[in-house]
Length: 302
Image (cartoon, rainbow, N blue to C red; front, side, top):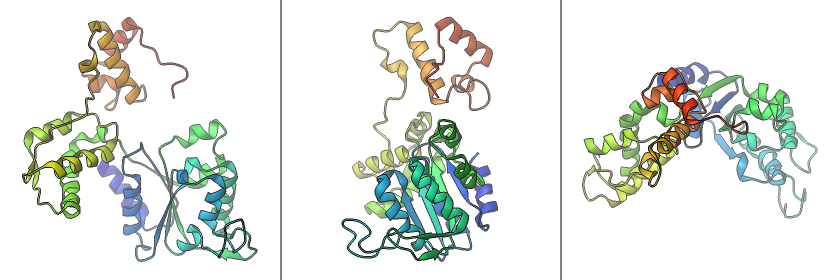
């Protein structure tokens, strides 16, 4: 799965096509965007990032397009926006689903015309940028809900890249651990060579709801505490609902475990990434157990 994503990156990198990176929080979407920029012919030009969720609707417009002196209260000098700063390079819009409909409309116009005006200004500024956007939301669902413009969705979704969650690529954990430890050694001034075999087994048995970011946090915490050059992974979050099932009947504990697994996998039952495969039972058996235990997907769940 990860190899397929890397192949896609290499295929699209040297084009100027817009890329939409999708994936859960913590999967490393910004890292994918940075790799895309480094593989492109724009690698010697700036890559400018903006987290669309970090600014209010009023501030975001100034952040993206810049402003002239006196454009609004507090605008004491002219300021270039992220679009202008990314000229000839890459502009990465993280959490693009958080843009207001008004900001979406303005973004669409800039993408179409490759030009804009600063807030409070009349000068049209031409830009040459490669746009990369990312979201943990299903943008098509947000289009259906009226929260995201369909025309902007199609402008952004030229070349979609799906970053798989860590639970779907457990076999990548040893390589990820090696890469993260290399970075931590530089950051913390340590000389950690690796993780013990037992520690690696703990890491590979976990479901990683926080994805790669959670793995980074656990390794950094263990590295700070470690007096050895081998990490032993002492404390893992308790992800198994069966160990939390004190006072429950076996059927209640089983129902809880099945339901949490289904929710984690977006109610996918069959297939290699389905709940049946994760739980180690045939899909028909899982459906039978769901019926017996009264497990149903609620209409409000997406």
